[in-house]
Image 1 (cartoon, rainbow, N blue to C red):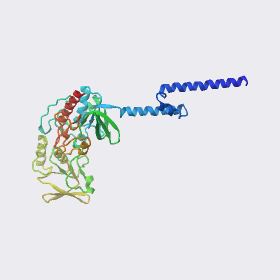
Image 2: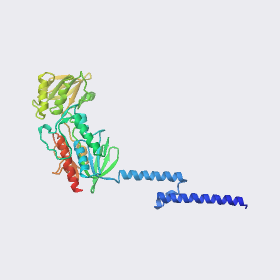
Image 3: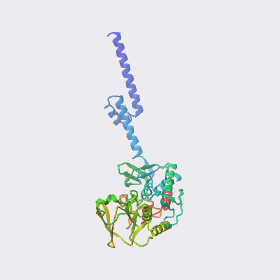
Image 4: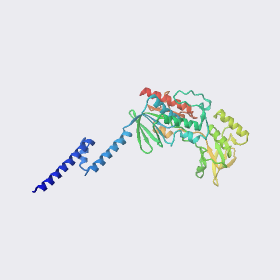
Length: 386
C-alpha cells in the first residue's frame, strides 16, 4: 500500500473521529444521555439535522407543559367585569402576583358595553343604596364611557394578566387544586377561584314562544335600533326606561310594563320618564302584559292581555338577566331556590376556596360599587389563607 493511500485513509479517519466527538459533545449539551429512552431513540435518527429537530420538538413540549399543566396560579378569576377587575387589582396591590383573569368577550366589562346605551348615567349608589367603597379602586358617579375608561386604565396600569376571548367551560377540584378547562380544551390550574360573571350576559326571555321568523327583530339591547322604526320596549327597570326614553327622541316608541308603577328605577330615570311622557314623545302601555307575538308579513304583531294588539318593526326586552345555572352547577356550587349561589360571610361558595362576586349573588341585580367591594373582601381572605 503506497504512502498517498495511507495519508488519505488517515485523514478520513481523523475527520470521522472529529465528527463523532462533535456528536458526543452535542449529546451531552442537549441531555441526550440523561436517560435510556433518549439514547435508544437517538440511534433512530440519521444525522445532526434530525437530532436537532427532535431536540427542538422536545423543548416545545416542555414549554407547553410549563405554561399550562405545570403552572399553578394562586388566583384564577372568571369574568372581567367590575367584580373580576377588582379581584385582579386587589391581588396585585396586596402582593399576590400569580393571578390570571379570563373573559369570554373581546374586552373587559362586556355587560356595560353591550347593555348600557351611550352616555348612560352610572351611579355609584345603585337604586339609591349607599355603598362605602373599601378597596383600592376609586369609583364615583359617571357615564358608561367614563366607567369603561376607568377600568381600562386600571387593567393597564396594574399589568393584569388577562385572557380575552377565553371561555371557561368547567372547573373541577382535586385535593386543593382547581383545574379550569376552556371551551377550546386549554387547561389551567389554580389554588383559589373567583367567579364574577354577571347575569346580563344571559338576559331573561319571555315565557311565550317567539316565532322563529321574528328572532332577528327581537332583541335585548338597542344596538341595532334605527331611526324611523316603530319600536316596543318591554320592562320595568332602569334599562327599560333608559332605552325607551332615548329611543323616544329619535323614533316612534312605546314602553310596556305589566305593572302601573315603577318601583325599581332610580330618581333620575323616574323624572326623565315623567317628563318625556308629559311631552307626549313616548307612548305607554302600563298595567298590561303580553300574551304572545305573531309574524304579520315580516312585522311583529304584539297581542296584549287587555285584548288589544299593535304592530311593531322591533321589540326590545329589558326584563333582567338570569344566572348561568349550568356553569355554576358544573363547578359544584350549591344554589338556593332562586338559583343564587349559596355563600358564607366570606363570599365563599359551597366549594372550599371558590368565591363568588358581583350581581350573580343578587336576585334583582347588584351594583358596580358592591362588586368592587366583593373583590376587595375576597382577595383579603385569600391573602390570609395563602
